[in-house]
Image (cartoon, rainbow, N blue to C red; front, side, top):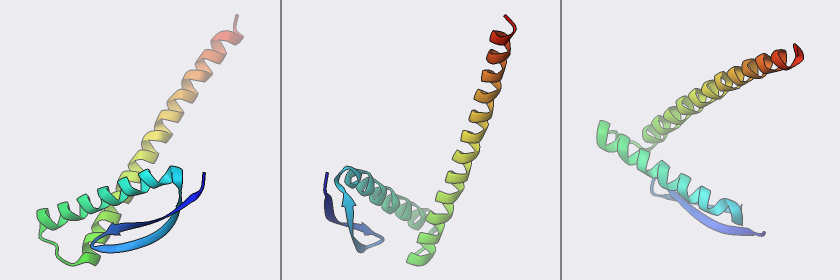
Length: 93
């Protein structure tokens, strides 16, 4: 698959980029979600400054990312514990 030249609009500015064909849809969805979150903060909190809006979205995104990482690590730890128990059961027979 080749590369595409696309433009993603974020906060009323266009950003040209070259992307792999298989990534195009994901990037467009991300652009749409970013603009929705920007609109949410603008409407909900009356923030007008674009830099402030972008900072709030970036902050929220990092909080979500850290939570997902914590959830993933907790899940992996539980799976590891369960595998250890299964291994012990199989080893004892």
